[in-house]
Image (cartoon, rainbow, N blue to C red; front, side, top):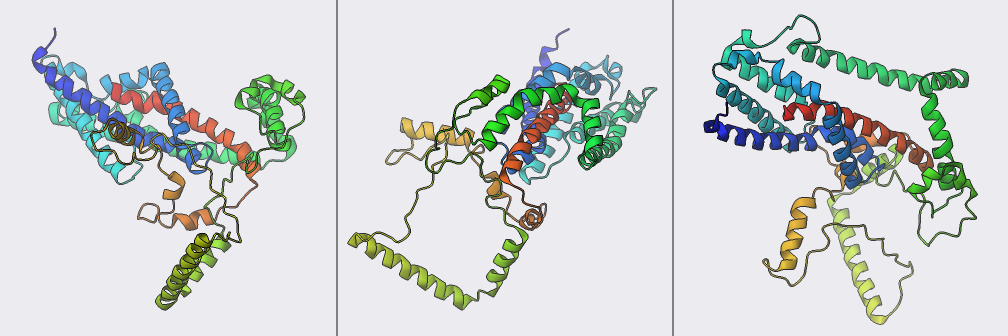
Length: 393
């Protein structure tokens, strides 16, 4: 029987479910892709496209069981048969509490668990509406009731830590043991990588084939039959500098020591020298004298928003279109790597943390960036199957 008098509950629930899902994208999805973006394996907009695809596939493909758990196995819905509107109102309160909490946490940059948020909301709603006995704390086995979620919170960190340690230890085994592990658990993957990926990497990194595109990957060994590589355009780099802006420990210590030695008087003198240098440069430009060091204009990066239209009023179509793009795409063009240098209570001295990391060859970083994206995609798929489904339910 349709209860049209409670349509407003459905409408409000949909709005706050959208807000909750939005916060998942801003908080939990960022957890999966943060390492890929901050390490420059992917650009921010590339990570968002892959995240959208993997989260959608995970929630649609294998998320039904998780949605069913939140919907029926946390609070006994049979207790609401006489008053179904109370269940609707209770679920609305749960999603409202979860979405507001996640919005506040995301505002302050805190990576919190969306599972804790919605589970706490549903459990609190159940206790307030039908009492603690109405909550399915134990369904007869560890695969039912709230206990399965509580156990997951305890077991998951240990399991993820154990698997991470195993993977790390495998990389430290000798050659014979490593080959045995690879053959045992990933023969098919190794075969695909050998046939398609390695020839492509050989042309890309060793032959420095700057004309090689991603779709040449599907040619497999045939990519080795490509001819000689012509000289690349001036300023073109096959592999980006993954450590741009990240200092070594020696560089950071030297920079901070020099900063501490600068007294206010030194800074004032430096300001005068800069002003004098600017005046000298201006005079040189007026006289037509070229500078000793040729200036090379940096390559402009692609921007969806683009520059602000000049000489246009606020209600001019060009200005309105620019404001529209800025409103929706401003976050995509954030300098994520640059923002990492900020100090705050949550991150501490992040610049010092990065300085402790060992710097490897950029080609090595490039090779492992594919594995990083693969693991992020897997995490995003399972996250869509798990967390996104909670808010659909």
